[in-house]
Each structure stands twice: as C-alpha cells, then as structure tokens.
Length: 234
Ligand code: SAH
Figure 1 (tube, rainbow, N blue to C red):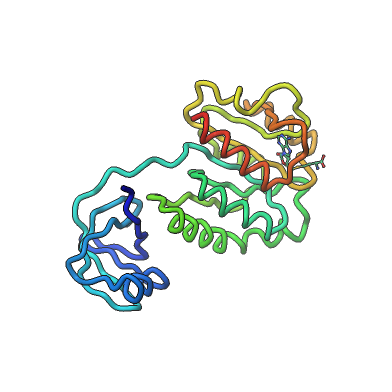
Figure 2: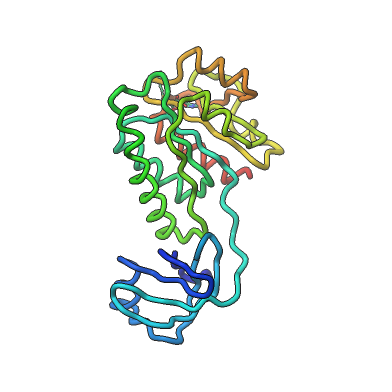
C-alpha cells in the first residue's frame, strides 16, 4: 500500500515541520498523536518520520530512516508562456503527471503583457507545483525555472532526447521519437505557435519535431497529452 506522503515545509538535520493546511489536516482531521509514524518528504528525500508534537499551526516530526523514493518522470518541459489561467492549469497537471522540471519560455508569440508579467508569476507557479506535488503524493517537487528567452532556455537543457511538439509536423510521432529515450526534453509552443525562426533554432540545437496527431491542440492540452505519452513509453 502506498502510504500518504507529507511534504515538510521546514527541516533541520533531525526534524521536519509541516505547517498550514497539512498541519491543520493532521491535527484536526487525522488527530495525529506523538509517536505515530508517517512518511514525510523533507528536503527532497522521503523519510519514515515519527510525530514529536502536534499543533494546528505546526506538526513536528523526528526523521528516521530514508526510504526509497519513486523517481519523477525524466521529462523536462519547456513551456511557452501563454494565458496564465490556462498555463497554471497546465503546470498543475504536468506536476501530477510527473514532470521533473518546467522552464517557462518567453516565445516570440507570447503576448507582450504576459511576457512582462511572467517574472513575477514564478513564485505562484512554484506554489502550484508544491501543492500539486502534495496532492499527487509525489516524493519530489518539480523545479520551476525563471522564465527565459528561447535561446537561454535551450542552452539550459541537458536531456539527451529533445522533442519539439509541433502542429506543423505530419510524419514523426511523439511515441516514435521516444523509442530508446531515457531523459527527455519536451517543448510546447504558445497559443500562436512557434515562429519559423524559433522552429529553426530548435532544429539547430538538435531538437526533433514531433506530432501528437492531426488536430490542433491548445498548449495545455498538448502538454498533458505529451506527458501522458511519455509516461506510457518511458
Ligand atoms: N497557432 C497554432 C496552434 C498552436 S497550438 C495554430 O492555430 O495553427 C500551441 C502549441 O501546442 C504548439 O506550439 C505545439 O507545441 C502544441 N501542439 C498543438 N497541437 C499539436 C499537435 N497536433 N502535435 C504536436 N504539438 C501540438
């Protein structure tokens, strides 16, 4: 059985502390008691942990042995910045589906006001991935990078297999592009799509263009579908 995982808000070498909703839930709903044992993710590691003290504002655990954590899906998502409400939904779902890293990209067709506001949104996106990680019982929290222009974003990619989701591609499918892949970067364009210059830049940087099928998907749908295919194949 998979036990419920809790994600610590703070940790020291020997203790972890949960605050906010998680503390309220443990204290009020589950009526946690000192001595009870839970699985707690602290500083990126999954531990067996024993309740030391309970309060609705803070539940403190003593950390015991480290447990084997299940790995994230080895997929680095480059997501062009698009309408924030849709993008946030996409980021939440990408976290649930297991993406390991998300880089917001300022694309040529990212609307100006969104591009300008993106830097200030990162904190919110990080909160979303934290909440979604807790909710989906992930043992790690995906990294959300600062928004970057495409060139800089491409320079920060270390994955071996680099796949550009492109509605203009007609032959090569994403699933075929994933054969023998271990570590994948997946790029999704903005609502207006990538420009031809951007597509060329991807190609020069070793990215292959792949399709998710004949229909034009919204960016957040493409992100979800792309990750689901990765999860099935990897
Ligand atoms: N403006 C374009 C659509 C852009 S869709 C048009 O109307 O023609 C936004 C992004 O979703 C694209 O940049 C691409 O990365 C992805 N996408 C949408 N449909 C896709 C498909 N069928 N295959 C692969 N990627 C797709």
